[in-house]
Length: 552
Image (tube, rainbow, N blue to C red; front, side):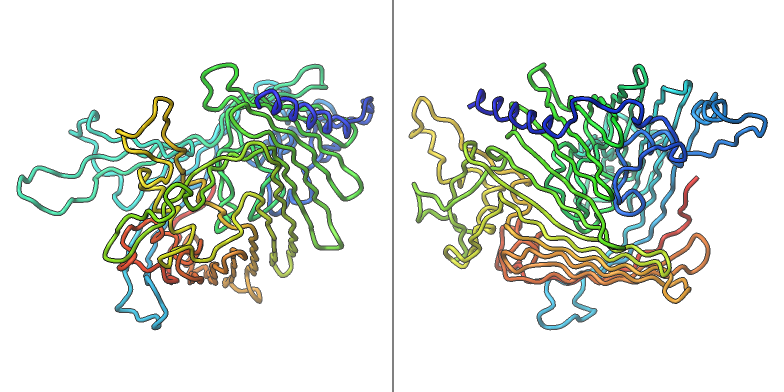
């Protein structure tokens, strides 16, 4: 099977090279170190709205600082001065937030204020970046973030550092917490931690080149492969997927080596992905070619890792009049997902939870010998006067489940899968210790990633209108839905700038769907007491004050 995966990757790589001209027009090649005014390329039609670029133009000409050029220097010398800086440029942003929320476990009987669970969540965060350009063809860039939650920074004086707790969040960040005050020997409620910090590195890499033809980057960096806004099946490299409820949030890229070869108005990339590797064979490989044709850009890529299913991806971004359109396709041989099905060995086995509430025993398995296809199409309409964004997207998830009917005891497959995630011993393939054969191994365990995108068909729509009628009032609306099980999220909201540096945002978040569906009540899916948590649709009302935020 491993040899077959390698052969499949080679075929995909050949497919990529089919789209790659044998002879590049060097005379017309793009200089990735050139400014946009000098003919540098911006990455696709979304460079100004929904996506960041993946080219050196964006990296060497990002708005991390302002360089004032001497009026006595012009031409090539001006270009050289723009790229070289004797000092280190620092920049960043600060965000202060005071959030209030009222949550209803269910709103079927109406939204009554005294039935809500209220909460207050103040927080402060900052993002810091540095940009060093000691030579015109060499750059070092880094970005880190610091966040603190409701517990505050606290006093470090006299605190035993060895007692601090360090939690790897799995997204490139580490949370640091101090123990609660336990000086009182009597049984009391746990006091909040006096120290709560989250530290993380977003990016840290260097850019350099060889012979003005091959351009390299090595370090931790976000890789822009997909063109989707809410969903991006072609984004197979980054460490975390898009949060459809907050698609503009920064995400984590892997530690990687990238080689870029520009030709004409196109680009060819090769990646060596070295995140979380211990041996040479752990390295993953990827290649991609981007071809510009008129106002459209095509992308063709391949991905191989001996630990994961090989993949072939294609992307398209274009425009029809003032409307931007995009699409992605992903073809993989096998799947990295752990699947579940009603147990064949113990079809009537069920664990008692409370009285007659039960969960169905499931078997877990993987599929590594069949092809899977996923794809997405979408559009965006972006206007500056009035400032408005309308975006919509459909996502077909080839690894999703098709049957969401109740399987028994009023439970769905997703219900029982959530229970199995927290109770591995309920797996239908598990055997008691006294019945295990010599070649026995524990059945495959579910992970939280196996619970995401459980359905086949998804949709999302965003409408945002800033500075309505030239006022300080803005409005937005988000719909996110699982079209397979009929569940979803509705989120209307308003924002008002009170004074400079202080604004308030109000929002309502309503979920809908039957019990045991993906979006009806995701939190209660993992609560093992369905009597008290019936997974009815929920409601939340939030008021967020943004205080003192800004860039520097």
